Image 1 (tube, one colour):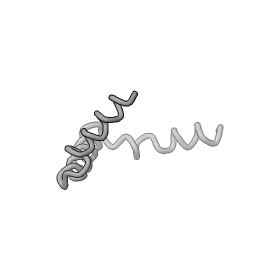
Image 2: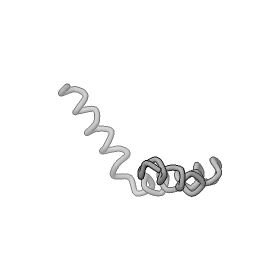
Image 3: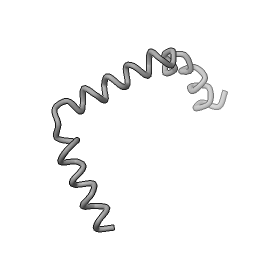
Image 4: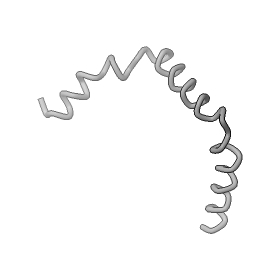
Length: 54
């Protein structure tokens, strides 16, 4: 477990502190939203019905 923790800390040093990483995440989110046809809007009412039990 200690080795895995060291690996994660090392990985964070390379990726997490890079200034381009948040832009990569935002770009990926926008791409997938458009590619999948805006599912967070399309299925909102279905999710709300499941949540409320209607």
